[in-house]
Image 1: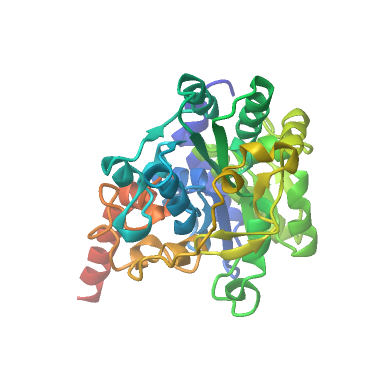
Image 2 (image 1 turned 90 degrees about the vertical axis):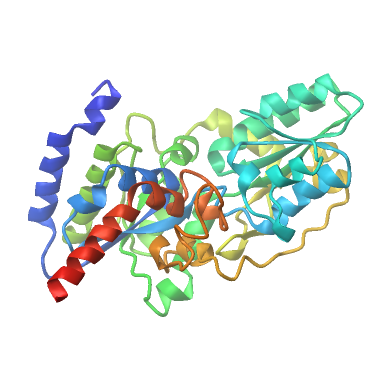
Length: 385
């Protein structure tokens, strides 16, 4: 295959669906978590759930970096803009995530904070060079995928001798979150979230490779299939997981061989290791404190650490009581289990982070799934009558 359209071929999708129907054993239930929000989006957008046998279900995971960003971290960025008069730069989706006191970064901007959307970490560095009289802070978020650009701008800032640039580092790590989910009471003790295997993230795996997932397959006996983001990628990965379960195998398989290998991008990994290091613990929205799950700036580059430069103190903040984002991120609930989904909480007026990013489970379901739910309820009501 050479072109995107080939990975969206409806006839091939139907053939994979037929193979799934043949190979999924009727006396067995298969429950797989797609960790990455890109896969959640693909499943919703292309109607993949409707092509699966009734006994094969997908569970949404916490794989959207905007979704798992806790309120307290956004509050720190807003504090820098409103109280420290810093120019705060960040990616677009981060601007709309709800924070404390009815604020978000975009609302803080409306109150006079100099908060700017950028397309890359390099854009933030350029703004610092253009404004030598102002403190410029890059609010860095994301999984492993976006860590190399952050590390690069910190190294470049030091090489250029910039004194007005720093980074509020909130990068989080995928394997630690998967471990946290597998060790959670809902999965390990209560069984309220049945998980038989994982679809491994695509972009993250390009950087870190497939090796970091081998422990989940071996130690937890949970097969992993790394997949690309196109619908045929996802369906093939589901078929690979079904086959592993049928054969009693617990391995890491790589459907996304066109971009992922076992060791990942060693050059990018070395850059990240030079500039960043593990935090002992970090709060994830929905998951709580997760040990060794995030990165901070190394001592050698401490002058570019916004937490140290501005003496910031992190304070946890509880989510809106009406919002079920935390439960949705853990796979405990689905978007339509939230009472405010699609009414009070919409993409235009998000109450929770899952409705902000297009990769968030609520935003994906709002765009592609809520009308299907209406049809299902209507059909059930008709049959009951």
